[in-house]
Amino acid sequence: MPDNTNRNADDYLRMYRQMVRIRTFEDNANRLYLSAKMPGLTHMYSGEEAVAVGICEALRPTDRITSTHRGHGHCVAKGASFKEMFCELLGKAEGYCRGKGGSMHIADQANGNLGANAIVGGSMGIATGSALAAKRLGRDDVTVCFFGDGATAQGLMYEVMNMAALWSLPVIYACENNMYSEYTKTEEIAAGEITARASAFGIEAHRVDGQDVLEVNALTERLVERCRRGGGPFFVELMTYRYHGHHVGDIDREYYRSKEEERDWKENRDPISRLGAWLVEQNIASKDEIRAMDGKIAEDAAAAVEHALAAPYPPAGEVDMHVFTDIRHAAPVIGG
Image (cartoon, rainbow, N blue to C red; front, side, top):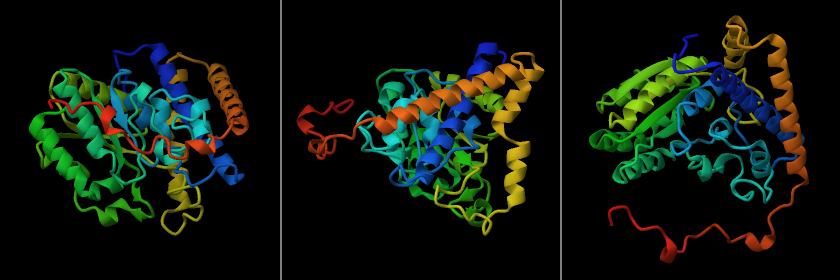
């Protein structure tokens, strides 16, 4: 694992905790679904934690992200709380969107999360617009757009990358390549190199090991600082792997990927195990201290789940609230 000289022991420990928080959240969300306590579907992020944490640890609170239908990890990494996250998944009024967004539409603007999106590639325009707004306002904020490898087939990506390159926008397009677009191997449906799609627009593109949080973080910090100085946009392909199926109901995965492949990624490339072992090797934390951190996070998650299960649903009278915008009170158009 590469060391980042700008980081200290507390930073490494925080990155470890954040990855464990994501994994623990997902384990609990999966149990809630399997016990029929959670409505709708959800898409697990387990296995990809180093991407969300490595990137979000390089961002300021005022920097923004856009997320995907597999977005719990991005939410947690950008500062979301267990309590409000579980309330949102369970449709409770204390959730980030008062229980109306659910798993695929969580937004937390106070922490710079402009929202998850159930439409494949649907947040690309939002992220690019956010970067344009920052530039027009003279701010040095950066926006990161998370999306999966399957989204590279969406025409919107090419439209917004074209404009981002023309206008030198402070946006980083982060492609989480988990090797499968739903139930199909990416290599069977995507010709050529994914990074070449960005290079065609003159956008600097990188490929990185998405299971190594320190490598992801070191690269992101460099790109973020260049964005702040007007050097964007950038494109990063992060090679990673989802441990679960496409969604929680996808339990028969052997017809499109093997058990051996899954076992290899879990046993030899797990991002949490890799960083945990590195922390011990560097004498930053002992195995007992790591177990204690894991246990505390598990307790926090269990308490949040219990709170969410007991929390009230939004009242029926709110059914048409937060659905329409009164244009009389809408914010003025930038530059208008």
